[in-house]
Image 1 (cartoon, rainbow, N blue to C red):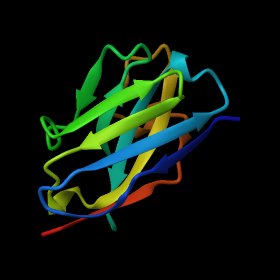
Image 2: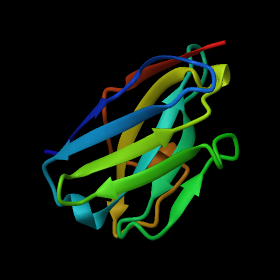
Image 3: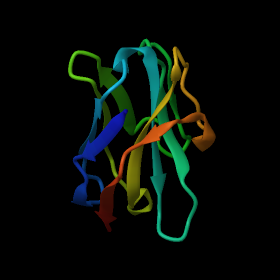
Image 4: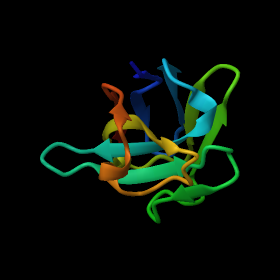
Length: 125
């Protein structure tokens, strides 16, 4: 059984930075695409960033391009989201997810099979 656990969320002022991590257990981490999504209260879960299984292809939502960076460490079985220049509109619960075997990464929620429990990010103005 694959399990994902996010960490690194918190409260930060606008313009600050946070680094989210997602630790994955079970399965063969290095063979799967990974993604980050976020969900604000009363809103649907939306795509933030995705990374292909081999770490070559990175995609980002337009709203975070140039500010967020996704990466993976296959030895540690973790995927990281470095978030810089944070804005109040980045406030949400952030979720990591595991995608498909040898996947390129997707911005669709339905393309992911396993999800973490989420970590809260709050950006104050």
